Image (tube, rainbow, N blue to C red; front, top):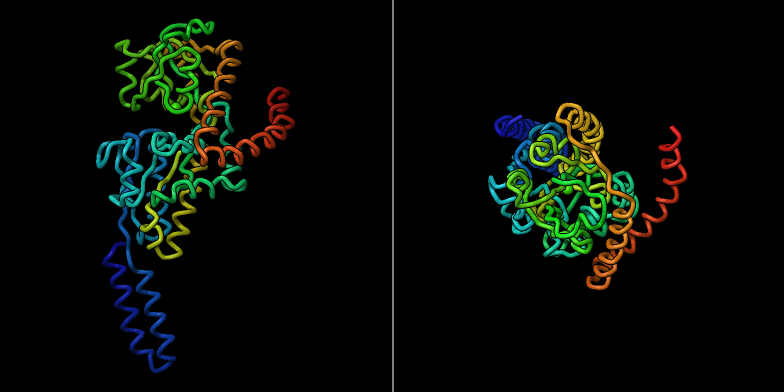
Length: 368
Ligand code: CA
């Protein structure tokens, strides 16, 4: 359905309405014409993202959203997707949506930590919730309302935009056997995970995804995290580092975000608003399903074909990282009122659902 077809629809409706005016009440007819005009109006949106265009996993969320919305609205709302740097750099997605340069964006909340200290809670918190726990909190535990309140001053409405599931600790050029091995280690690790890594003796570095490979290969950094086997294989990190650590700690269920310019969203008719909301929910689940299906296959390829050395951090390191995480979070709570408020909700939900999941899933994982 294109604009021409929609325009024809309106014309036909207007003409037929003139003939029908005698048969029905004039007011009734006018409101029906008005409804048809509203239904035929089209909206062309732009979405900027923080990922290379069509990047596996992360970059497919925006593409699928665009496809779903176009199909469900029969072309009344179209969304053109731009990769990182095509319209704005990946780290300026939030500002572009806030200023109304574009109607929407797709990114990760922890990238806005400098502007909004509480934002990482809606991206990834070390030793935090799993993807299913996070989605439960967001949609049935009050999380989404807190998130929308946090972004409201910026004229942005956020919605969940996909989940990577638990991420790997990452790629290391040497084996990590004790805390001493972390000392002075230069690692690409963003967000609060980076803060924790610093306390553990490491040197966190912030790089965009596209900069990681060359930095790892040249030795500018000693280690890097990115996502997990499916995405890491796509970037070819196995050609730059030998050891791959599976230990889950810094991003336990990373939530991505759709950002909507509040005014642009409010301008949409109610049915299109609902289509946008339902498409975002669908993409959120879809991305998680895809990672779950593809990660384990990619890991087999990395280990069997590319001879990657798969490792886990020793318990000493995991314990230390957990301890430093508690310190970092306590400081965030003390320094930022929004962080404290949201953390109260997040941590209460986590401690309650953890008990339940330990009783059921944790036991089942060990028994099956
Ligand atoms: Ca990551």
